[in-house]
Amino acid sequence: MPCPREAASLVLALAAALCACDRQLGHQPKFHPLDPSPFFSDGRSSRPLVAGTIPLDGPDPALATGIKDGRYLAAFPYPVDRAMLLRGRQRFDIYCAVCHDRTGSGDGMVIRRGFRPRPPDFTDPRLMAAPPGLFVDVIANGFGRMYPYEDRVHVRDRWAIAAYIKVLQLAAASRFQDLPGQDRRALEALK
Amino acid sequence: MAQLFPPSSNSIVKAAFAAGALVLCLAVWVAYRVERTTYFTKAGVACEQPVPFSHKHHVSGLGIDCRYCHVSAEDSSFAGLPPTRTCMTCHSQVWTQAQMLAAVRRSAETGQAIAWTRVDRLPDYVYFDHSIHVRKGVACQTCHGRVQRMPLTWRGYPFPFHMKDCLACHRHPERFPREDAELARLSRGFPPGERGHAAALAEHVRLLTDCYTCHR
Image 1: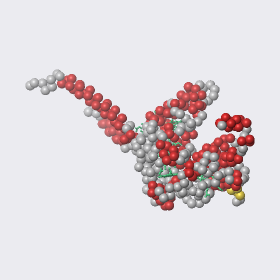
Image 2: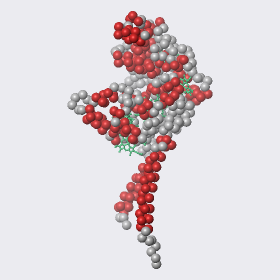
Image 3: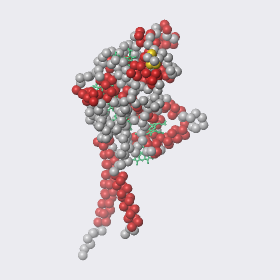
Image 4: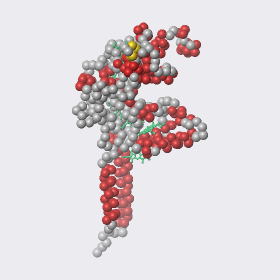
């Protein structure tokens, strides 16, 4: 016959074991991102921003949109170095290449599958002469049928993409004679 | 009165105990195996979705990068599912009449989110973070399987996210392929100087396999 102390601890241990069966720890009463919620009429627990919300420490609007006093910014606000161009290439290939193609010709996969209108080739003389602010503006605000990408491309990355588009334009406009000897030999070897 | 149990019943009782123990072990083993079948882990079982979204068409067919839609995988713990607006960047112009996309268009008009059925979910007592893995060059496919071949999304092999699957990599991070220079750094030994590679790797693994890393 176990003494009452032992019996009590046995009951407690059993109760603890039963609690564990409930798996409360695995389903905690909290919301993960994008979990549904019956509380709000639209059924979302992640609330959309109230219209007109201004971020407290948001980026300078001129940097975010590439426009200052109604004019496109003509100079890059960040240092244009190798790291920035590589980042620009990566971001361009993720967010823009599906339509604009990796070379910027405007013949990406989605265009070939029927997206209309066709985007302009980046070697279009108007775009060749365009300041980087124009590209940042198109990314932030969209253009015609192209949706804005401000929700997916951070401010710094917008300038990196703009710089990379300038690289693509430079590459498309350069002639064989302009290439450094090393690249010329590499191309000749391909022939 | 004759004895109710003859001496031979001793061995029968012993055999019965042994058989009982064996059956118990078998039952535990079967339960363990059954819990890891695809019926329970749901690995490889396509989920019913409100829109029959195909990673195969969009990723393999069109060449869209994962991050075009799963934007926050690089910067936050949560990889994120694309809002309807992301679909509309293309579907405002392509396949605009398709019956399959009726729910997407309705969602865009009404602002009511599409209720995707979640495929991968860890229990709440596990802490997981996408950004550290993606930034250290672990490819999405290492954990999610070949998503680019899935006509409907399922839990990918080889990781239905049991603790042992996370640990397999955390114990031997150098054995899993990585996209970037991280692997080279690991195999060279990271802090240049007195600490040898083996010691550095052991310290790294100790941190990665500490219970607190994933249960915090």
